[in-house]
Image (tube, rainbow, N blue to C red; front, side, top):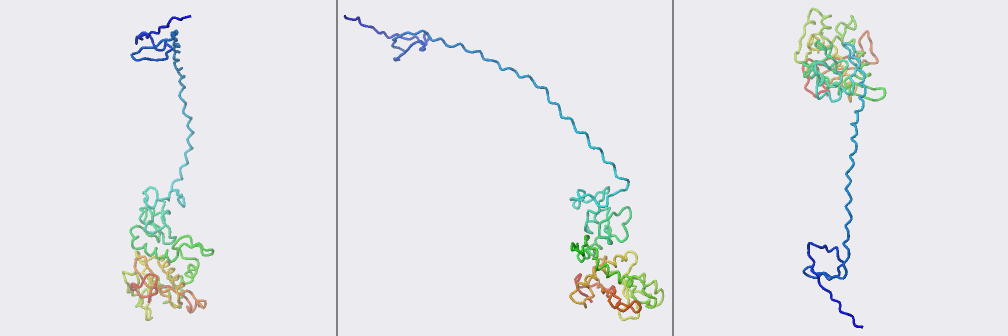
Length: 330
């Protein structure tokens, strides 16, 4: 049986009437012609799902500020005029570089004579070798204040070098400048000879302060002094070849404490000397002048009646020394 021929016709596709999605296309010809084998129903596009609006979150109530801690109870004010013996560490920290105000004076924070006396309310004690409150006056007795610092502090510096801080069992010295216990004991033995008339039977012995010598030699040739204003030293005729040399303890020159300090330094230099013959050493005075001082220990053969083995401390002459501080002199 003969079958009738099948005619396939190319159908132009209107570009704006039918979508290509409506056909099962095998071949796409130029100019938008499509060879159609089967027409299918248009594929329905799924309906777009409605976009859900975001649900607004409820606004949280603002957080409450934490309750403030109750303030610490106020410290009771110190009693009027009260001042701690030693300032707290935080008071002293860094204070040396800033100085002090006139309201607060932790003077004990300052260890050196020059930094202490630079403070308007402080004075440097030549007894305790510490910085103390000057108060409203000129300072405690035997202390150095600002106006005297340039002159007197160098002698303090020498003494702090001779008596440094020592932390050895039995020889502890916690304050630089304070004589060691051994030197204190030695000077205590000769102090009556230096500062007083020990025996009426020996009226020209000892008495190495001007005021003490004049108290027992009120008239006559022995009452005439030859003094050196630069060194603060005087000489009296006592019948000996060298004469009696004394420290001038007039107001503004030397105090008894000044002499005690110079003799302590001289004794330490004598005891520490390489030779027992070295009893004279250069000491720097509170007048910032070098002098030669002889210091000897009381001997084991000391005789109070005759003065033998007495030991002593006195200036060697009245002129200024030329050798270096601490070195032997004559």
